[in-house]
Length: 417
Image (cartoon, rainbow, N blue to C red; front, side):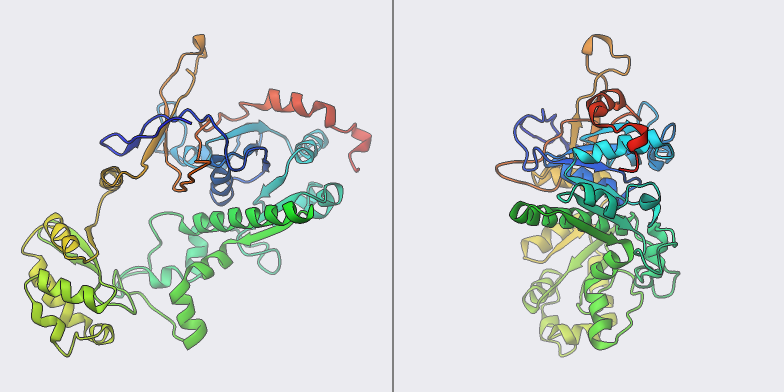
């Protein structure tokens, strides 16, 4: 595959997408939409899987309409962010013909991913019991908001799950209102869990030849991802609350105001604290009985914050970041997103990749404006991520996919199988 190299603004060079991917030969029938499912299937597609995205006629994935912002062609950047390396086929699942086409697609696929409300796929004749009876080797992954039991009828929206799942109760300032994370974090976490479950099921199939069902839900994924906060309740009965940017168990581990903008300081042990105290001109803090150990610092966090704030406000965040990092203290400014990409470039990490795109008018096969995508964070030495296809137009590949499936579509009187 082509060489990736970042531009000064954090963009990575164009990748040609040639070479073998770790998941080459794997086909995924992707009936999912919005974020959790599409994110999971994009991760797998980056690693070589052939993902066929099934979309509704005339509408497609809901996120196609979620703009602004949009790209130069008016396509939602939300949709573009999680649908590269996929082909798009339009199927009308409300018709017998559409369902038969879907079954034919599943028949040639290794994995099915869906995130309809529980029971929907069964009503369409595409449920796991029916399809796996026909194809025992199929991996059937279902993503829901609140499981397939008592919570089946609750809509699975990220904001709702952040609220009822406890994340908002620990996010924001103590004196302010509960806050959601600045991105649909629960959907992303659930997508990661789905892709992990799929890979585990594929490993089992490699060993036994047997497929299985994979079920993940947003609420369960969030509770798992609350890690130390959830463990505090499960083990010690502690119900944590909002602490702003402070940490319930570590100090100093939060943001502080510098002369120009906030700086994050993450002290994880006594050695780092001693280095911090020396770097800010207060070496005696490390021997102060109030701050000698982490437990002491947590107990006296307000006094410690006041002392550090007075020192840090004397210079800018970039100055202190350089000084503290040189002293071995984890620290850095609160960056905007453009600054974050530039920082990744400075460190030699992937930022933004440009995927070549044919001109929308199709003239002479020339290239139009490339699709910019956030690079995959997964680095594999032998089978690295590839960027083969830009996010598809709605139904862009319907004709070729239906032609491929035409020999496998049952006659109408065979629809019940």
